[in-house]
Structures are given as structure tokens and as C-alpha cells.
Length: 274
Image (cartoon, rainbow, N blue to C red; front, side, top):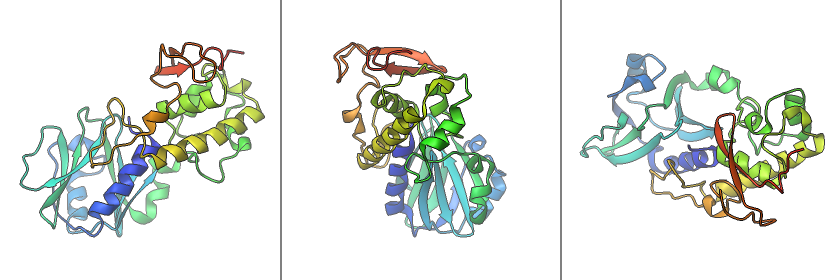
């Protein structure tokens, strides 16, 4: 699944390729991805020009002036830029035909992705955006902010850090890495995490996400480049996907468990249960 670093990389890449291009028509072979009225989506966006592409957490924001559309890639969503004459793949569900004889095509094998039409001025009030917490590299993200969000919770810290209303943008890969760097067991309950440990989580989140963005994110499993950009943060992973390998700190064998229904990798010594 693409996480914050991967989504920022997609936004940066699309900015270079589609900004200034006009949408001349839109085809929607599978309309359930569009969570707005399909006909309104087509009518309003046709003949508009892409002004910018940015990200808010795991959401892509396509700015077309007065209107924008929000796009969440979910598990396997990808964008492709192809010549208009290319055959449409069976997994390409939304096709924006552009004014230079190319298409911006949304590809999603599982069809879990979401697109929402919105007025650009209303983006921050959209229910999907307004409920989000602070991003890992937001200057307002502090140890006190996190502590106040989790200090009464009986949920595991791994599950809490995946809650996008608490920290917006951390996903399964980076939560494993942050908890390892912070020497915190992923099963520990939120109410047991100290203020000092919250500080460690915040600092490591910023450090890891900044490095991941610099690397263009991870290219592992279902997330691969669709725009000619290959992330290589997977070369820096310490525990995620490392089951059965030696811990880079203490040489103990890394284990895999499930927390909140998600595959979770950790070192039983460095992240000892308390």
C-alpha cells in the first residue's frame, strides 16, 4: 500500500507531467471509485486545466482551479500516463484524456480507490480531510499532542499509530520502523506509553519519513512505480519484511506477529514487552 512518502512522490512526479495540461474528456469504465455524482464529475472537470498536484497525508489533491478532486490510492491504486491511442487495460477505471494526445489513467486491480470532487476552497472542510491528524513532519506534531491522544487508550500503540485521525500518513511499513527505532513493543497499550516515549516516536517518525521521501518511498510488494520513479527506502528498512533475519542492533531474530489485523515485524529483545 502506498504510504505518505510514496504519495508525496506520486504528487511530485505528476506535477512535472500534467500541470498545464487540459482535460478534453473523461471516460469512466468503473464508476464506483467516484464518490461524487459521476455526471457532475465529468461535466465540471472537462475543459479544466491542472494547476498543481499535492498531497495531504495519503490523499492526492488535483487542483484544477475553482474545483479539485481528491484521490486515495488505497491498496493498489496507481496513475499511468499513456498515449491516448494505447489500448485501455481492464484495470484502468478512470481515464482523463488530455490536450496533448496523452491520457492520465487511474489503474486499480482491487478497485478500492476513491475520488471525490470538491471546490478547491472547501478541501480542508471535506469530511475525509478535516478528520485527519497532523502529518509526521508537521511542526505542530509534539510529544504532548501524541500523549494526549493515546494516554487513556487500551489499544496497542501499533494500532494507534495507524489511526489517521491521530497521525496522518503513517502506514504499516513506517509504523514498524518507527516503533523499532523507538524501542517500543508494537503490542504495548497506548496508556502505557510515556511522554518521553511519545517524544521518541515523534522524532523517529519525522526522521524516517523525511528519509523515505528523499528516497522516493518504498518499492515493495503491491506498491511499485507507475510513473517511472522507483523508490528505494526499502534498502533502509530495519525490521519490516525482515522476519527470520538478525536484528541490526542486537542480532536477535526478528519476529512477525499480527497487531490490529496487520502483519507486524519487531525485535523481541530491543522491543521487549513491558
